[in-house]
Length: 362
Image 1 (cartoon, rainbow, N blue to C red):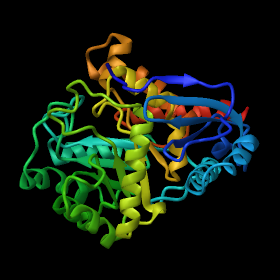
Image 2 (cartoon, one colour):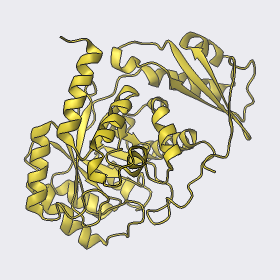
Image 3 (tube, one colour):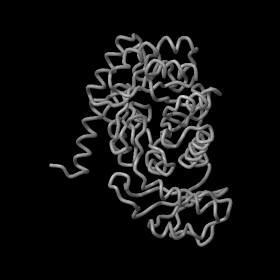
Image 4 (cartoon, rainbow, N blue to C red):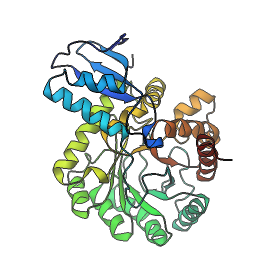
């Protein structure tokens, strides 16, 4: 069992909604890509105690319907409708109008796909410069694997792995991101030349992390993960995976705002593969546009993950490039702004071709 609540379709929006029902809006078009100020259609989810109902409506009808809700529900729907059409802000020097490719540099011996390949700082630097030449605009450097089943790494070891690589790449011209859960590693990485904090725990693992990000005034990537690396794949279950993760990220954004981290410095990541079954991952990809309504850019990290191997019957992670690119393009279509990938050249090529087709360029 992977979801507790059944989902039932409705033929229209209800005349009345109980105050205890949570309402969510999922855009069914791509106004953020076209510059449109309204949506043709949306899917509205009504989350009750024992069921999730969904109905498709026009933007005009959903906006008018929201006026019949109680004050808090009306504000929620109206904010989500506004966020759905809002262009991405510039974050960490990354233009909001473009889709950005983030190259993964794992300075670890045990990452699920490329563990051990770039443990040496020189090799990691060369990989980063190659990724930059291939079209990456962000490089994400991490010294601790958080793959399912991985063991934690102590602070000193993580620092020794990641910081020399950041120092070597500080002048490369890319935006550097530190992939860590520890405030001390974040601080050292920012001192060494990183400018973005990418935390798989959404700034919950280390009690000092949020204050550090706020004090340094740097962007943060908030990712959803179910439990810790050791146990997150032990029969993960949700009431409704997309709505549960929306609620989690919404709460983390609210916590960041209260701590002094402005919304325009927050990127959200639904965390594909982190405490999710194949079914969960597919639902999240189909519902990815829902997360546009959080009002923050979306990062998609699907590269070479196990669910792609399951779908493609490919056990070797390094042979999942084509499937990874397919997921990435599907994600861009649904509003992903930053694509975290191992295979930068292949992703950039596919993205350029897809964008030219979408634009109708000859």
